[in-house]
Amino acid sequence: MKSIIYVFALVVCFSTIGYPQAQAAKNGPYSKNISSYSEDWKGRSFKCAEFGKKYDWIPEFTLGPYSNPDNSELKALCDCIDEDSSSWVKDTGRKLKNKEEVSWIYKRGFPSSFGSSMRSCVKNK
Image (tube, rainbow, N blue to C red):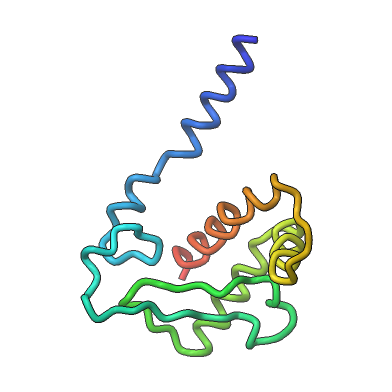
């Protein structure tokens, strides 16, 4: 029993590494602290679905206030997110978009997995 608790503690520990850095990133695309954003920033939403049915599972999202990708950069980001995401993430995204029933575990895991793919793709650009 102690080994199970120890493994769980390690998983929790490693899953939170790097989180404070993301919080502190000034005007980063995933920063929760918007106090450093300009006052006139309202957020600009992006939709990958406009590039084709292949991306219909990707939800509408926003980037930081100083992110202004053109269509080719946005399509490259959508491509990367699609390639980096697993099939269960894509299936869950489609079900959520169509308001179909989704298991609680997939519903809970979707934002984390999608966000991870998005962060990975932005870092690689």
